[in-house]
Image 1 (spheres, rainbow, N blue to C red):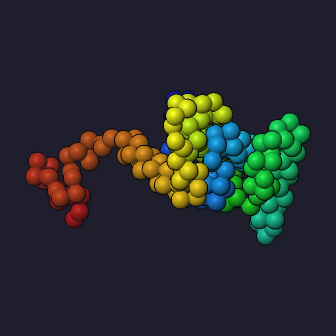
Image 2 (image 1 turned 120 degrees about the horizontal axis):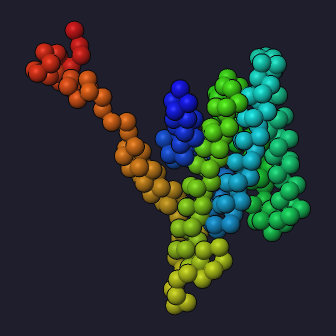
Length: 228
């Protein structure tokens, strides 16, 4: 029983990382992701900020889900998300002013990010706390690794640096295309292709009945693809 529960929680966690990645699979929250990924520090900062907000919002909504009237659940969800967005916004302004200035309006706009609203409405408001925590962490970290990865490629090719450290030789001529919006879309499309490849490799193996009875039928089993 414990093994089954552990496997289920692990699958919920990995859904956000790969199988249901909010950016590469669900295709939501794209505006901020392409806008802030010109440098790795911006990508990591945005991703961790989103992770904090989605985790705390899902936890609070899951705990009080039975007390929230269905007729006003959306306004309540927005208030909760806005509260934690304000917290992370002030933390960045106080402790990381340069990062806060670089990301500009995109931190306050977390409150209307489709990723968070979609998860609290579609998952946290219906599931217990034990399921909500791995879901929020998976979605948040899945969002973060994509931002950091895209930002690393764009910063490296567009400036020859990563996190401000010179990686490519000084003679390297930066490709400014990658720091512009078209470059962001190109790198993003490459990450989508990579994620689809990884996802295809993680498909569940066929069961014995699937192997015996393929869709076109199996003479050895005396079936016609499971159809009568």
